[in-house]
Amino acid sequence: MPLVYNIIMNIYKVLEEAISSDSIVIKERLTQQCFEYCSQNEFIDSSSFFPKEFEKPSYVTKCKIVKPRALKARKDFDTKEGLATLVHAVLHIEYSAIDLALDAVYRFPNMSQKYKIDWLEVALDEIRHFKMLEELLNELGYHYGDFPVHSGLFNSAKDTQDTLLERMAIIPRYYEANGLDVTPHILKKLDNKRELPFVKKLIDILHIIYDEEIVHVQKGDYWFKFLCGDSKNVTITYFKILEKYKLLDRHRPHVNVEGRLKAGFSCLELKKLANVNCF
Figure 1 (cartoon, rainbow, N blue to C red):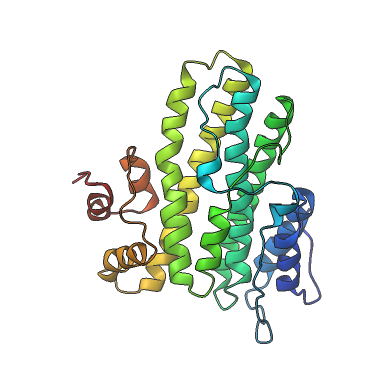
Figure 2 (cartoon, helix red, strand yellow):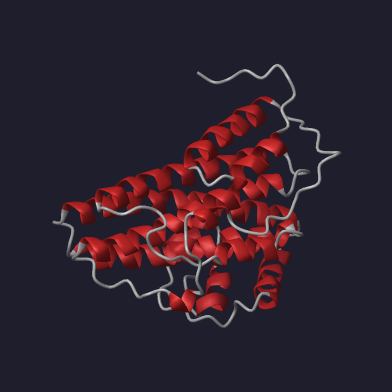
């Protein structure tokens, strides 16, 4: 039964606590409170609110953070440990995505009720994804933090903390969209091992995540285009931002044309991104 709020709630204080917490239980409870409050209140006063800068990601208490190149390649999925490294890697992305979605609400308070609800919904989805993956990781005999991680998404969030247009371009429209490219490739690699119960469970989870990540990228696409205003500016602006962050020259061996089109990308963008045709 939804809570009914008869008093003003400082959602920014609640969001700050949710982002800072390393407990998924606390994150879920506080995110649900913010979602219900925003659903019931079209106007939320933010006149005296100034977002803080988070110096470290909330998972720093759980995980050893290393450079991306220091992470071992994930190839052997026949053993529990090999599969666990893959599950842990996806789990870490989902954890990071929770804080990024919450931060999108926390850091840009002047956006509309629809915007707030969109990203709180995303955060709740990411929490659910995390819990499914964490259960599987525990069944394999491991816990979140048993393997090193990198802080790339957190760093990108810091880099874009002053400009919502760049945040929408870089996080949902670049990094999350890259996930739409990678997930089908992972599923293909896992498919010949689906007779293994743990692998079958991971495949099922990844299918759920993939379908819902398309919706998340769609939301990022919507707000990016909303902020661009004139539709003629979308592609030009997007590639200027990618160029600014030195993301244009990265190799793209697997481009999911169908998934990216569903998420809002144009054929022109896919041509410029990866030299693929979809006209």
